[in-house]
Length: 121
View 1 (cartoon, rainbow, N blue to C red):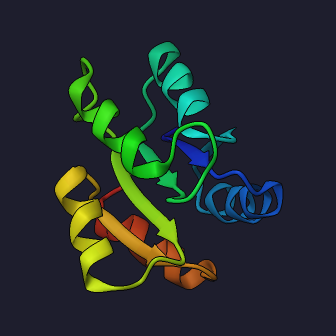
View 2: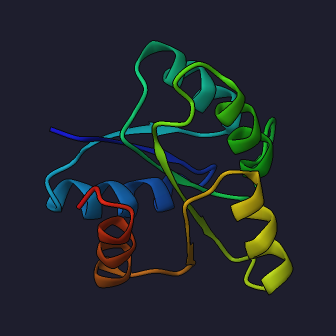
């Protein structure tokens, strides 16, 4: 079973995301910020990461940049899930190492499509 790490400081967003990814047959883990997510990746690298941009401690951009520098950090597919929707932010996320981008609020179909695009659903 493929594993998805959901990284968001909102407990509600983590819960909604978990329900969606589990309904798609993925195992879900959660982290409330980028630092916690990096610690989890050190223990077991997930197949895909749903990543919020704006978080305390370590934001999504810092997280994906650090993840991609680590051993096996190139393996997980990273999907930014955020309210940042201008072209400059999207380009910055992709340049930092994200594979896809989805706007909040998202629904089941939208997230499923993005996960299919990166090859994990």
